[in-house]
Image (cartoon, rainbow, N blue to C red; front, top):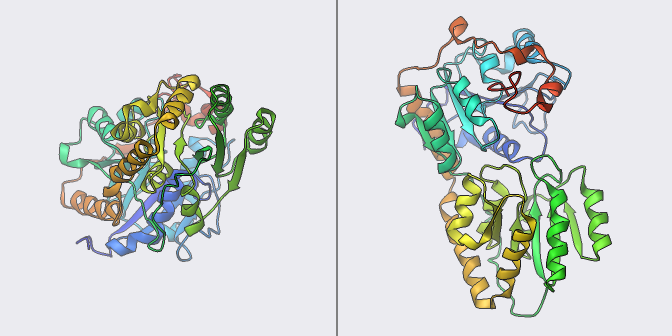
Length: 403
């Protein structure tokens, strides 16, 4: 149990609460489980309006309800005019991926500010540099992302930048996976938003086609939802390759799905350390991951270097899967066991305990973050709609270091 007193509240600032993304999964976990480690949680959600079923009790989440046509200036006005009854004063504010930090820092009335970095997205370096002097501590979900904070937030000393292990909460009643020696297809899984931006699911049929040409028997399973589900289903039908779309599953049913998978494949342009990847690995599923500078690649490397392929090179991804499947059952079982052991340290609520200890430590240290008018960091992008800014390259002058 952390020594952080329950009277010290924490406000989680995030873009959305309802979607299926990993950050939203972590947010919901905070809202329900922070009290277990001595923290009183609430949240400020920028692009959604209540009521929120995700809240553990009424009034825990404040939604600003902004849309794509609003701007940073709109965001500032919304925070100044919203009923702040659900936003405690003098709280520790936690900005997930630092989104909106430089826009709201002079208005948030935070006692301390902490950033949690969930991924290494294009332009992250500029955003971090723009937030230097506005945060008191940074948590990164992988060692690679933690180093990113060290490099681009020079105002922070080493004890203010820390790795936090993403949570893997395995149901106690879940049976241990057993490998079947019988002949069957290679089962390749995908878990996450079924979309093209970032996740690049349109690349997956290419992998399937290469495997078919190589004579690898295969079946695909998809956990999640997204706008590309129908397109993806039709494409697999055209190829004559079996694909099962489970949609959204929760609880034991979600975990039991992993029991039938051999591999989990990512085709992303950028990632951090996907929670779904860790959860699948905890059940013995072997990851196949692009060569991106992030925690997903680092964890995959600990299973086998050969499971990493050049980002965007789907024939190479197919060759990695083919090599895996060409091994004997004992070799595949050994990789499965190694996959499980790599994530063993993510259980036992390591995430919650690390978070509580970090909040406690930051509260005992001197404040480094600017407050009030001194924290104002105006940016040209504030004057333009979020939908327009989001279409620009991250290093475009109107967006660089802003969002």
